[in-house]
Image 1 (tube, rainbow, N blue to C red):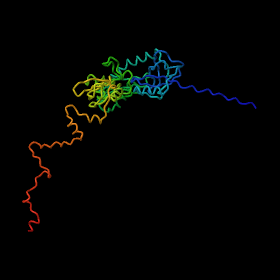
Image 2: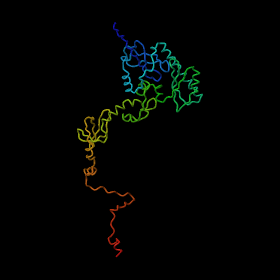
Image 3: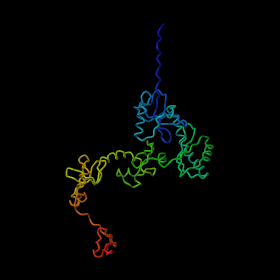
Image 4: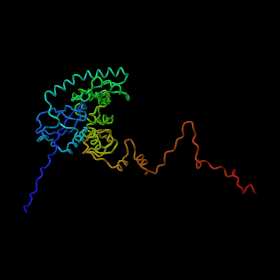
Length: 361
């Protein structure tokens, strides 16, 4: 009986993905594709998402693609975007239909041209219905499946009648999305005071809160008009270096700490975070700056034994609790006499004191 030769099964081909930026809000996502090769120049692609057909941009360094496959692993991609604080979904969000043709680009330009008309129609109908809302922008999906309107309002808005009338006028699905001031800047922002395009418009996806503590730590001006962005809130770039500033600040000694320097002992009165310089004041009033690695922080026990400037040894000892000097007397409040303690009251004369024995006699 002939020995059966085992049939070698072909290994299943691994799935191939492209990193695409798509939609009016510039969302990033991985899209599965079956193309044999990826262009070596920046390209546009037609992708299929949950909204329908959309045009997107191929992003990422071209060296990351090999044999039509995005070479970085899912963990590497996640780590990069989490570290960069960019919102990113690790699960595939759709499929690549094809690389965009000149006709696709022409159709996209046509849809952008009619967006202004769609916004005017929405504003007109909203005014007729008495809706208190501001239409910021509109996005006509490439495949024509729907029109997405972005608006701002103080509170909740009942836009059901508005959606019904718009759907009748354009014969397509209408979607309304309420956004905030930061999202408004993301849609309409252009160039910031630094001379570059708004971060939220260019790449920033995850808009985390920014507070004045970050501006104070970086010693930026506290003038709101100079540290506020296009959206009217504190600039997102204040958050980029906050972690570095926080780590550097931890290596500086706090103000008031006694340190040992090459010129003797002194007290820390200030510190520069970026340059890592410490300003020290000596008992005679002189001041000097030293790199943080050239000073030694004195232990707290040594610092407590050191008399402060203008204090004598007696005062220092008294504060340390090792002096036998009597405590300071309590002064009475103005306009009010201090009642003497029972131990301080004078005893009555001996002849004036009557005892039970005397009365019995």
